[in-house]
Image (cartoon, rainbow over the protein chains, first blue to last red):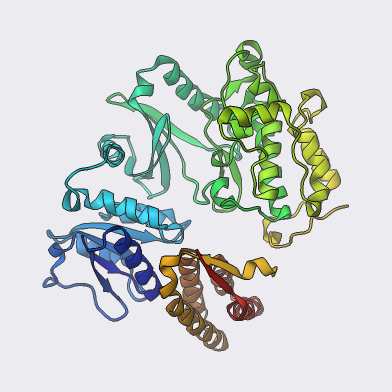
Length: 422
Length: 101
């Protein structure tokens, strides 16, 4: 592996070099400091590298300009472009300018870097490709093939059980978007396909700022896709990072979630799968719910929900575990479990298996909050009552409770750890 | 700041990189002071941006957090807020405790 590492920050160059050598001890890495050297000229032997890592902010000069110039040369190897977090428009421009992959610098871990470099250099460095890598490469190839009017699919950014997720952009203005392309095994499964299309139909119907916007959907040569809003702020799981958030901030997020639930419940829809990965943040800090893959029309849930157990065990309501008919209160319970996690940084229940966790929701009282979170204990109890008749009945009731008991505070006060009580 | 916020855990195989990292942070602190004295908000913004990018990568989350505040403060030209964050950075660098795992 031969790598050209272009970054003006000595510490980043040291760190990335260390990560690469940890994986490929024989790697030859040339650290290229753009503060001391100009853009490689025509005599520079680009061809002798397997990959280039190129930063966006070069101290002097613009990484995008360097990217364009390098890619104009016929001997340019694959380029991994590093962008700032929360600035996806740069990622869009980089991919359009020919970058082969991008990573957000602030979130770049050892694993992400190695995965990206393995993908970019698979043919040059490794004779055989692991099944996992092969699957990801297949995903990248698929994204390049799908044609969507007015949209350019740029790069695979995630994979789920039902769909692959791509960063895309609107051709008119480079607006970052997300394209979800359904896996073929789902397309061939009539029930699963119906569920995916129901997601589209439901989300379109909701029209709320607390729900991810869907711009279009369609089918290109049997590749079923959705085009939806891109969330620059990432998801709640990323925000939490296994740690608690300050109570004022947790309460702010929770209140946003209640507004979101109020909106979807008003349209007669239960989400049924609330979890940190399904709560997304926009750049301005507003929160929206995504992934309505197992959501259901309330009337239908009441009529046919019995016996069917769907959802994520960590956040399931007791009635969901039992496969009983569901109503609004199932989402209220799951939101309570999320609040517990936001406040404490821990899961409400742990277990060796998904079943064990699910059974805790059915039989085990929620652990009390630590003493410093006492002001939130009553709220939490009313959210996660096992008996749904004793629970808050709907989001409006919860919002009313919050208004009476807590003073609303903007996220700017996030570093204050004391709740504001009346 | 609570005592926990001064504690940082760094991967063992990065231990030999930390002296250079810390030396660069102290140099950065000096540069921040100079830039603030000169009211050079563009330089402050760039320095904040760099802190934001490099802190988390090494496990120093608070460096990234302060970097973000400094970048934002530079954009709005808020000298008092910038001074407070630079003081906080100085305090942090003088007290940070690093453990290697």
